[in-house]
Length: 284
Image (cartoon, rainbow, N blue to C red; front, side, top):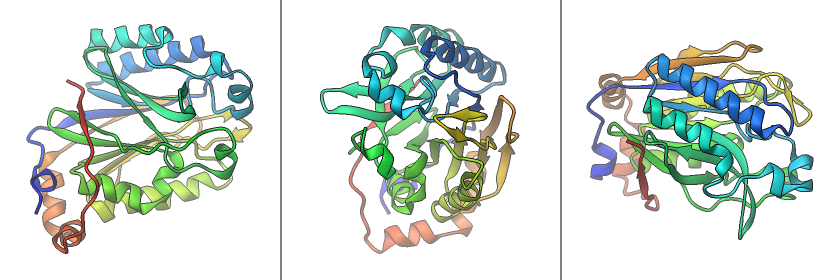
């Protein structure tokens, strides 16, 4: 068995998922909200907090496509300085959903600020809905973060509907799978309660979802951000409608116990299956 798969963290890690309703097109207000909720997560002992998909502008595809210079973010974007300062002051990392733009075009991304208040490389959503593919380019690289010995893989919304995405993360040594999403009242709650327990149990991973509340981009969202154990049980869950920050402790002993009892991932690896390598970015 590959060492990167076998190695387990040694200490617990407190993480948080935040849900709120973004203000359509008001990036300053939405950044201020991330600052507020990041500080709250830190007060509750979290070392990392995750925000919903495209939270910094709202989901708003037409708005973003119409004026990407205003509503999409670039590397080292100065507008994020208040969040960087909050992360540095409270020694907490943040994963924030945003549209980004670069030489290859627009992406749906997770921006990452580490515990020192410095930018890590962003993750770009790889699996796009057909409507998204008309505006955005799919990402081509997985993203693995490391914090206090925990390997944390990132996903954005529809990524989590493809079992291969989380499986590849697990085969690259992930202990947790962190997803920024937009799940709707109409079908999203049903999807999320199938996909996320399955991703957790199949890969013996902790799984986290950060979802919107209220309306954004024409979608009525269902909230219910949550954290699942490596056995697929909900260990923390937010309401369907309120702004909230919830936290959970990732326990290395619990992770080891489930992986000892549920061996599908280990058996898959033992068959000689392999995943492409991934670079790991330290957040502490």
